[in-house]
Image (tube, rainbow, N blue to C red; front, side, top):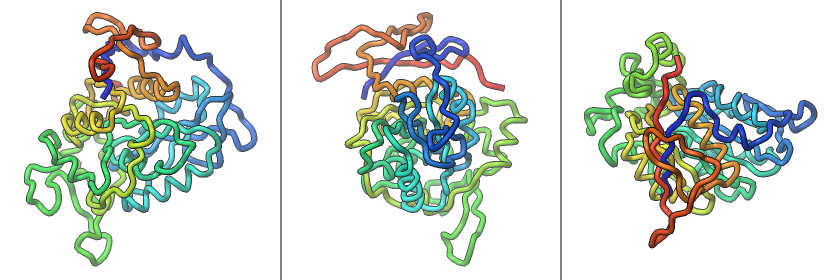
Length: 326
């Protein structure tokens, strides 16, 4: 795992001075999309960034990230994730990816990480995987299994409960597992947001959450794209949904270039600039050898000094959140 230490400045996109803004192509099959619409081809040689949301959220959670990436001239697809089953969701995404021409930076948040892990396997156009406080399962692993590996997740306070105690199960049919799972409204701000957003925003997100079926958390992974595709990973250090130690475990196992951000699981909502920063790194294949460290130093993300260590190059990053987006 490569770890980068980064002290963020307010509303600062580190690649803004390095990447010229490019106009998005507005006609034909190359138009960028926020909703996962028609076919997309790269604009000006830039890869297409495909964003995949997780459970208890929807594609609108990427809105600020989409705006920032489009301002840099990147074609973007913020695709819908059905949240019906891991295999079905992965097949849906894999089919969508086949309609996109040229290189793809594939980004997943939360359960979306498990979906991209399965969907990207065997697709030569996917050049980078980016995990945003996300599951990166190995073959045979299920997401709820990974959330219970180390302490930190607040999805349940009773490991033996048939349904995680922070979740409500809403029946969909006759079967005992045929249910939709929602985070309980009184648990949402704590579990998903670590109480980092004002109550009015947290309440709005709680009542508009999209549920996932029970099988999304129990179905094992079949294929593992991070074993063959380079990956980048954002660890949220106050993650109460998956658990920060579980994120670190998965990032290290995948050998990802990793950043740590003082943020909740829903880092898209609180720190979209940090999310955009890491996606831009992945888009440029940027794995700098050593970043400057220290809470009072601003890290220069575009160029760093090399440090040779036995066994490989190690990068250290600690991202501090400058403010909560209100």
